[in-house]
Length: 281
Image (cartoon, rainbow, N blue to C red; front, side):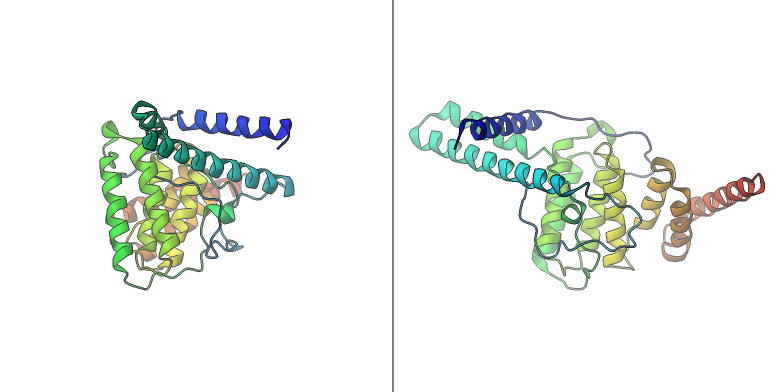
């Protein structure tokens, strides 16, 4: 390895350490309902290109972006591997204090949301079907929900970002390990909740996860369409898509009476705005 490559590796390790120590606050712009990611560079087969009709898309800038993402992912994996070997070395050699330092740093990485950056890798294909009962998947869902509860789900004053990030990692593990499980729509919905309510500036990822919930199970018991509509309406300011989804709420999510009333009101308001805008043209 030449000097330039050494410098690049050192920079990547330093940057990863800085990220691991950085926190962020919960996004509180709009809260209409109660509301350990392990970095990965391998893209499973289930992560096929998204449907062309998806409402939100984050396109790849160019081939250089792909190269940069792959380089970053390789450095990230190497950093995690090196840190783990260092921890094991200190433990075997009896350097208890340094072993604790390494363990502390490893534990801190579990609270960092590691992005895959390319949407086809970030969000699984919409072609999965939630149709098989799998006990192991049920257990992962329960684990994820417990982490959300410990993270203060629905109780903003008790919010713990690290638990929420770990929960999202468990839900994703469920989807990637058991892609035919009848719990994948549940996992997708809760990923949407986490990205919407507890991680800042991630509305686009939130609606993608909500969309997957009803794509994988059109009869999902969760108010995924409503939550997506609210994000499009109030955060992404795409009122056309919001209107379409509010109509779907009335047709598909009638069990949530409060949401249906809200959707009907917003349909009326948005329709009037559209008519008024058309009249002034």
